[in-house]
Amino acid sequence: MNGADFKQAIKLIDNASSVLITTHFRPDGDACGCLRAMMDGLTGRGKRVFGLLLSPPANWYAAMFEKKIPVLDNDITQDQLMEGYFDTCDLIILVDTNSRIQLPGFSPWLEKVRGKKKVLVIDHHVTGDGLGDVELIDPDAAAAGEIVFDLFKTASWPITASIAEAIFIALSTDTGWFRFGNADSRIFHTAAELINAGARPDIVYRRLYQGFSPARLRLMVRMLEHLELFESEQIAVQYILRKDFDDTGASGPDTENLIDECQRISTVEAAALLVELSDGRFRCSLRSKGQVNVRAIAQKYGGGGHTLAAGVTLDGPLEVARQAIVQEIAAQIG
Ligand SMILES: [Mn+2]
Image (cartoon, rainbow, N blue to C red):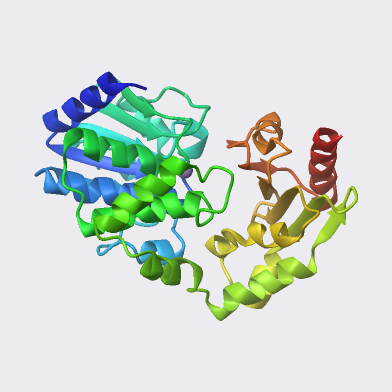
């Protein structure tokens, strides 16, 4: 990615009058932060802007948006999408992803309008399907929010307090509140600029990290009760079953970041959290403190992500999925 890419991206946006912005399913803070920043920024440029989410966001992310962002399958059906619900849009922007598998229900339409509408990708993942006519891809960026920030700076678009907060949410969540190995000097520089522009870390922290419902805390307790350690306590594996959701009253998005809890154990090098899906498969989140490349493991089973944080969906039963993951991690620890 270079300056010419930014120029092309700005040209695409300048030439568009109506823009649809979306992001990967299971939207996280980076996804939602980039979505809000781009929606605000482009509205400020006089564009008609539509946001779309591909699965329901967690409550604490939903609360980031003044107006509810429609969710595919809930508010807009896939049929409506295919039949032209967003056909007035002349530009599609994908943030924090460039992969078809991350765009369930949306990628068939994207394929259908290919060539007819321009697509801009803003992403920081190494792997991608080349979905954009113009792609701002920076694998060195700790969050896609960094690239959104660079875009605003390059274009000289004003960074309002609201936009600064949205990008701050993107940066802070993808770095685990600036704790992970991807929290480099660049991100602290950007964070400082965002604070100068009006972002309030204390307010963001309270909203994102002190906003648990009692049900979510009870779900976390269940997960911790299921903690098992392998390979001299270097590998932590936890699971959450459908029953745990039923018993606690928690829901799918409540699992976000819960995997990070077991990383507090000093010996733990890598962690996995298996969450049972309604179809009996398991959504497996993987984290590493540096020694283990969890993206390589996720990719082997059809998933993806970053070297220190990745995800993959595995077939059940639980015991088989768990054993496979423990073996993969153990092989890397050696
Ligand atoms: Mn991201």
